[in-house]
Image (cartoon, rainbow, N blue to C red):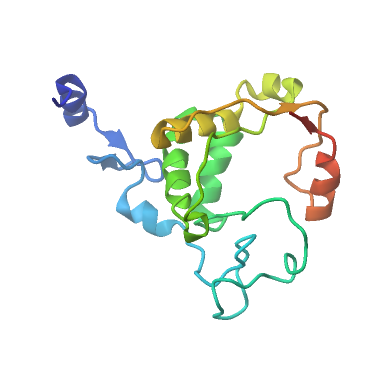
Amino acid sequence: MIPILPTILELFYPSHCAGCGEALFDKSRLCPGCWSRLDRLPKECCHICSQQLPSATSDFLSCENCAGRKLHFIAGISLFRYRGLLRELLAQFKYAGDQSLKKVMGEILSLTLQDHRLNGLSFEAIIPVPLHPHREREREFNQARLLAEELASRLAFPMKDLLRRIKPTLTQVHSDRQKRIENLKGAFAL
């Protein structure tokens, strides 16, 4: 049975595109035009970190940064480049506190999890990265936790708080890779 009240409400008060504000009459949180504005990563990318490779190569090659390194994860997967509309939406969500964007971010993340590098893997839980309590009080919410809750509801996995932040860290928005690594050392515990 179709829930009648939400259907009637959607008819008179449709959802709106998170990118341009256009009325939407389907389940997506972005209109087709805004989906096309997202800058999709090419298929020719590092199979570990998703960095674009310089030329058309096999799906199983790694970039200079990942080649020969012992890493403790399978892959850092992204469907889109962090620029343009995606960057704007993430900034609105994270820094301007627009929590309504968790729906579109959840939609993007659930599409990202369809990446071929994850085929055959099974997952037991979604684990958000915690903020330090001081930072969470400043922001008034933990964006990673909201995304984990949204993704868990879409994928029917439990969300589990298995990590805790044990030391405050500097903001990393303007840090290079090495500074980010140093900044996060010893910041988390199980």
